[in-house]
Length: 308
Image (cartoon, rainbow, N blue to C red; front, side, top):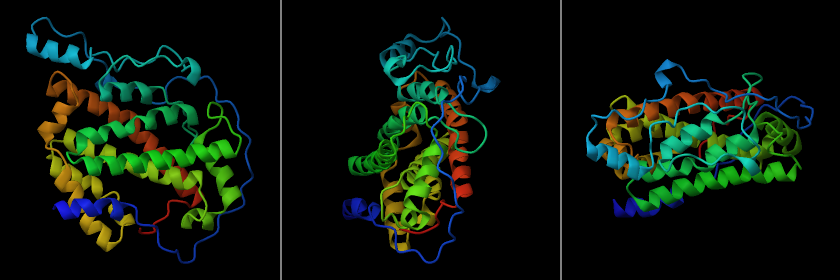
């Protein structure tokens, strides 16, 4: 198993093989960046995702102390008072607990329901930048955590790089506008083979990593063990890995995954009920964004099925 884990970084960095013929994308006019309308957070919570009331007076003192130490006060799911300010004046996060912070950040993601991918780059980037924190809770092996974090950070960096190259402003540009610009600029064949760096390639793999994370947590929410959750989550990436990579990376991920109890403890909430409630909110906020971006990729013909 130690040898297996030592091989993992090499396996995860395998390049995409040369592609066969691929249908060319239709001509798409380059779109100018436009300001998003003044809207509130994209996903409105339903009744099941409403905040907990202040801790009841009869809760044990141990739970209260643990909650205070983690920086969680039970109000992380309060909706923002209005549309988010630009990055320079972005309100500070109210909690030290990773999941509570993520729920705040995903509430601030600005998006329109149509057309697909109408998501403000700046607020989306701020949420994804902190997504890597979940790997510390999901996996017990440092090497696995480091590799997964590096992949997500590098892919997000590729999106930002292309945004800057296009001279676009993250505050006034949507992911859709950036992806269509890159599709015209780079061309679908070069994007697919990753012969040139592109926002589409970076976004494709950021979205796949996000789906992996949400699938893992949904399995935990539904009562699965850490190992079973890892297996189900890896199934979302398995179609894009060759046989050798599937066998070894899949085994390494399940071997390195933490137990359900260990994961709940690392989320640093005062009790399991609170952890489950916050996780449910996290999924309700994040999964629609993953689906939105996937719809955009399908529309552009860039949800490439190639194996690495």
